[in-house]
Amino acid sequence: QRARWAALVDGLGLTVPEPVWDELAGSSAPETAPAPDLYLWRGYERARLADQRGAMLLHVLLLLDGRPEDAAAVTLRRALDALLALGLERDARALASGTAGAAGL
Picture 1 (spheres, helix red, strand yellow):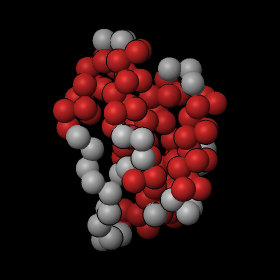
Picture 2 (cartoon, one colour):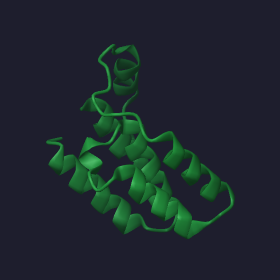
Picture 3 (spheres, rainbow, N blue to C red):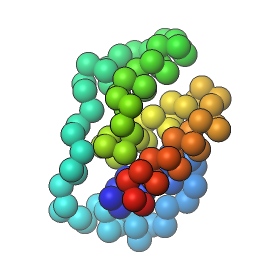
């Protein structure tokens, strides 16, 4: 849960205190969420590099699979990066707050 919280906060450009990062780095707790689908991840990266904004958004939505609260922290972080890069700050904030609430953060 703490990794998701840090991903959401950091993804919005807010400050995560260094002691939290240190604690996460030293934590041996396994990630409970599944790793992102590598095919979709690669599709997102290719779309990002080619500046294909619609494809970026599509891949982010597919990576989250309608259940962002179940996504791995790294997937949440990438989704927030993408939304902000696309100029969708309000949507990024809504995703972060909705996910935090649904995940009980």
